[in-house]
Amino acid sequence: MHQDQVIEVADGFDVIAGSCYCWNYLTAYKTQVLTVQGHPEFTMPFFTAFLKNIKEKFDEELINKAQFSLQGNINNKKFNQLLNQFIYGNIGLTY
Image (cartoon, rainbow, N blue to C red; front, top):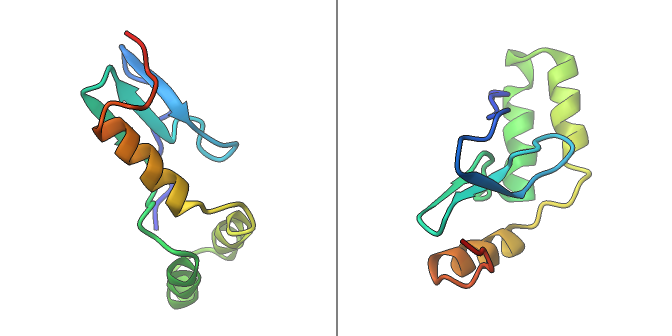
């Protein structure tokens, strides 16, 4: 588990999505590059099991923060729709 984040958006990139935990979660450079900071492939059951398995290896406060983050809305379907829109040029970005 890591807590690495891009805290400053690169020149020419636009923020597409973010949250109070990760302001620059999804960024794009024109219609050529899409970056994502999280793990949209993680499902809720996977992440819950992952936290359970690593509990002994990390500080209790860090594990508690990660468990608290699960209370939010993990929306893999929405992310996949956005990714498809970007790939097919329908994301609505204007340049």
